[in-house]
Length: 265
View 1 (cartoon, rainbow, N blue to C red):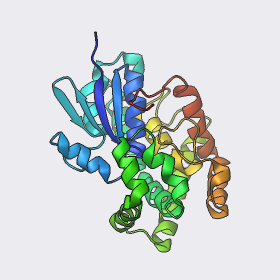
View 2 (tube, helix red, strand yellow):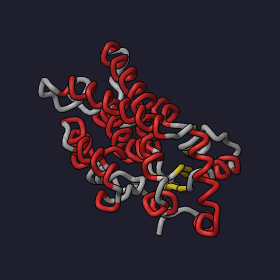
View 3 (cartoon, helix red, strand yellow):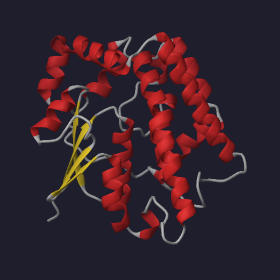
View 4 (cartoon, one colour):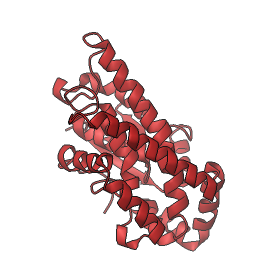
């Protein structure tokens, strides 16, 4: 009997959704242990990990702290057709292109997504409630309901330096990322690098999914009709762009059977 790996996560995180996608694609059995923001740090500390080690995969006697560690340790062991990195020996240029693009998308555009989304959605607890509480330990949910939500919100705002100006700059960063992707897609290609799905595609899809409230995203995004008008306007704009449609196509076609395993009821 195969014992599933443990995936300790910050529930709403885009990198967590990327990890879910990768593990399912590689066929690695796992059981997610999701946590609300800030509470996830306590969960990581309980297993001797640091606050920056999310998502943390405990796989047998091996631990993989973060998406990069999972890719380094597991991608080469997957069937070739399911690997997300080109072979660096056979095609070093393509490998370098994928690695550079995915890094920029996750750490530049992706941080724009984080800052804009948190600034826009933290205004109304109902918009983030499912994203903070679905499947997390009961005590975390009770603590948030009993009054911890306010301090958690304040900590997120302070940690990310959120303000109207920061959110506007973040949105500009996201739009620039969409521009960059659309320049690649303009020649009719189906994938961003080469002729098959790579980490670059998955990085863009997961980092951009909260901006278009993509169907299939594992972080429990709010429905569009529950969002305030200014958020609806941005989401609708980005959904209608070629890059936004590309995100949804990847979720529909490449993750249709990817149902994350978890402790969620």
